[in-house]
Amino acid sequence: YLADKFGVLLPRTHAARTECLSWLFWQMGAGPFVGGGFGHFYKYAPSKMEYPIDRYTMEVKRQLDVLDQRLAEQRYLGGDDYSIADIASWPWYGALVTNKVYDAAEFLDAQSYPHVLRWAAEIGARPAVKRGVRVNRTWGDPAQQLPERHAASDFERSSAHEP
Image 1 (spheres, one colour):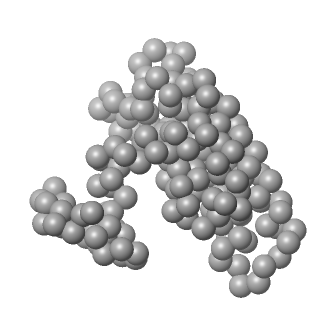
Image 2 (cartoon, helix red, strand yellow):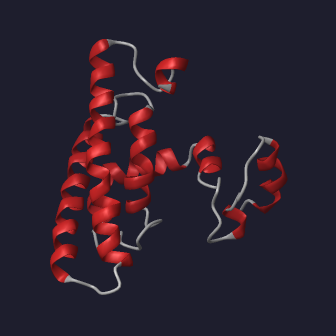
């Protein structure tokens, strides 16, 4: 809705828009296997069970391969420009391959997905993304937390803590 309403983050031509939305909806269907499946059984389940870890690991690696192939051809998921598809996908896959969730990058052999790593690093370096990942964060390094955000000035007050 917001991408349509404000005319940004979504290509305007029919073909490019369709491609971008296809990747956005791919993430909506694939992402739960990363968090609800792999993340749960690999990191959070009270007991480690081989079958679900193996099953979801193979699915996540398949997804990373799909992304890597796409990102070998295009700078971003939707094409040449940063889009809503990247915004929706980066918190799942970017955080996964850069070891920011589940401590699983080595287990998943994230280094074997160089195009996903390039994409994750490029998006992670965007100033708005750097600010956004701090919002509502109440864990980890205090310099990377902004537990409440009500105004842009909240970032300014906390910027003294930035690395």
